[in-house]
Image (cartoon, rainbow, N blue to C red; front, top):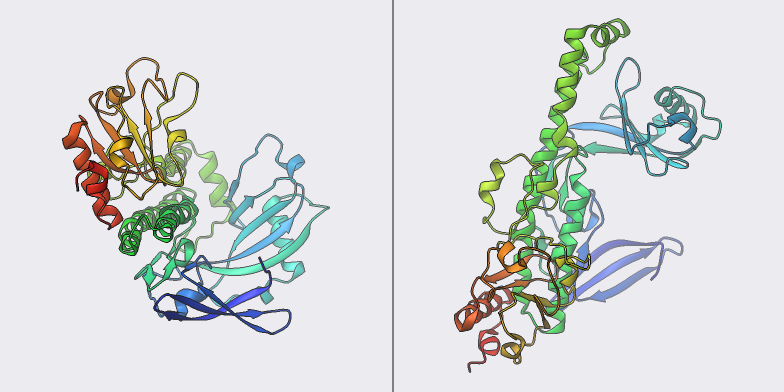
Length: 426
């Protein structure tokens, strides 16, 4: 691994990509040949822009200057420990983010669209931080300042040849709800095993075409929720007496807090922000495909694991304290079978894809109701799980017909003719 290199451009060839990198220390241009590029270079992705991939959606919803500083605020916070501290009231508003309560902080300071980091010198930053904290901070050190625009955008395409966009390079969300990071991790979780499978020869290159349709719709959903969370904050601003310019005077602010009727409205406005912080269905309950489309009408805090194709394998705790999730092989396919499913691995003897089987009663034990019953399967049933933990196919009753169903689903997804190998039929 080499540090201090800056990606400049790339040339795509039939069997790979040649990137030109700049060594920022020496000025030397370095050329690197690779099969693929995964652009994880952030919201202002140079890779995305060099390919001419447009972003769809509103840009510049709000502008902030992020002030990175070091200080130990533990004694100041006392028992009020958290990660995000939203600042409301007369004077400075914004958000304090605690990366390490005793050292590393960021202040998200609202600013005008034409503000620059140069406008936020040492004295300005110190004054802003002291206003946010409310008391002197003797060990305060300003480490850096950087501006950013809040946007709600998704790349028009996630792929150009052998170049893939992932994370903020493919989608830019408002930070309200914290959905951006998990969406980015989901991108890589989805893409990495597919590239590995293609390179190992047990999936065809065409399988990589599934990356964009699976992940882009997840980004659209999460972007919409992030944007909704941003607008929900407006209800709280209104309850606190803020004007259209998002400022409030001392007298109005204090009277709203003191008046019982106004205070009730404020409490209701705070409760209205629940989706900002509780979105488990979006974080864990998403599925590839439309099998859970009806769940879109449910509150995003309501998550009920379901054993359906495209969803994450549901967690079930074993008698020994382990989880079904621990059975999933990150390097291959996993067949989790009911107690009466029999040994299905012999049927996959001709399959190139790595496949392991875990059988209830032999490899794991579930107290109470059987695992297969909890999944809605017969004891002969089985679930085929991808390396990223999502369900690829299900057979409810096993047998030759069930195995052929699994084989067909696997063949279609991997874009390679493996059905005959999995069924043992030439």
